[in-house]
Amino acid sequence: MTDIPFHCGFVAIVGRPNVGKSTLMNHLIGQKVSITSKKAQTTRHRVNGIHTEDTAQFVFVDTPGFQTFHKGALNEVLNRSVKETLSDVDCVLFVIEAMRWTGADKELLPLLPKHTPVMLVINKLDKAKDKQALMEFIETVKADFAFADVEVVSAKHGQRLVELLDKVRPRLPESMPLYPEDMVTDKSERFLAAEIVREKLFRYLGEELPYSMNVEVEQFELDGALRRIHIAVLVDKEGQKGILIGKGGEKLKKISTEARLDMEKLFDGKVYLEVWVKVKSGWADDVRFLKEFGLH
Image (cartoon, rainbow, N blue to C red; front, side, top):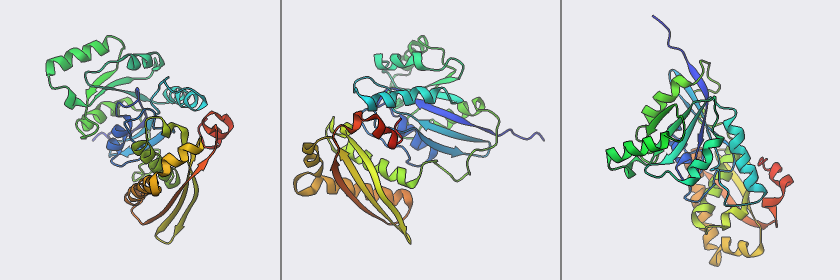
């Protein structure tokens, strides 16, 4: 009887903002480790999500959505992060929306690696009601780049993800696993707590305001089974502080409560969470400050 080889490698998930990259990774690993939002470029750090099965370990790298709309040091750092990620993986999943092939998608094509397999992942298959139209759409996209393979999925509903993994698996090198089989991310609970708060900021605030904010974990302590977490939200201007706090503190309270509930679900335990707001002018253009937060 021949032993089945074990495959292990890094898989980058890339695409323009809002095509469902973070949702895809969260479903592939079976747990939420990357924040999701309808707003562009909510993922600021490269997040490793790990899925292990009998014959393979997939280390998924979720990247910021490459875009040029928001200027400044922070945006340059995020876009550079995408380029660096693509140079150091075994396979790339290039995610687009079904029936939408935009200029923003095409702008990414020159960044895709030439000597690494790039798979086209067409997300939101529920938007593709007409099978013939979908096949024609796929051929149109394939004409612009030599994709190694194609899969149509629904990240939101978890459809055809097994088929996607089946296509990725043989493209990973034969190797022993890099992480324990029960590990789903290489990020700390401290990091994940900050990401959860950031997700709520993007969900409940206006279109531009969250891009002028950063989240700093000032305290993360285990007190028996209780996690005590103190988080400061940094804003650029005094006026933004009032918007975030809201009338009578209601908006900040809502953000804090929902973040705490998500943390308790993720960490499987009680959380005491305090969130407050600080003003730090110009933080998003302060390169040294960005490096302190790992955004470099």
